[in-house]
Length: 276
Image: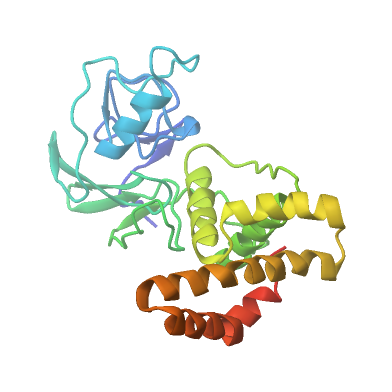
């Protein structure tokens, strides 16, 4: 079958008809950079990328960094917006969200009646810190399939995130510092986003885990000892309910507030539970 459009790979994707390089690993006169991961960048005379990618590259390859593979030798130009069309010789180029990391893009080149799409690193699952993947129609598709083999089957994202959050919360509760290894761009931000949500919805602020650590050091790690912290905290809080009620409406209101706090199902549940 006749190839509708020639695409080559030599340490980067090359479109010979345009002499255009995409994610070239060697410096080029002109190249498109799909995203800011180290295996997709080099020192080019001129680089085309999204504004978010340009800014991340400026931070990752600044003058104080040992990684001197800066993305451009010319003065920085504003990055392209998603969907913005750029005329390049007799072709039209545009960038579209890839869902991989912040600013990552698929590269669409329309040339001689053919739509060539380079996916770069793409992610089909929704992420928290990257623009969601856009489905783009094309005639020629060039896919970077890092985990494209059928043996790669990953568990649902929510299951992995919950396991990571539980590990961190349980480690802190045990007085141990959790350490996570994650790539600095992309994975690190995703993990932090899930941890932030876990802390917001966990119901126990960080101070609770600090108190629990010292409580267990004094009274042990048994089930009764651990739950006792919540019980003692609840009992100690009762006079404050009485004082608040009395201040707002007198002694009668104070005793009503005291009784409600003492008999509330929510208060009882909290007083008999512990987060580990």
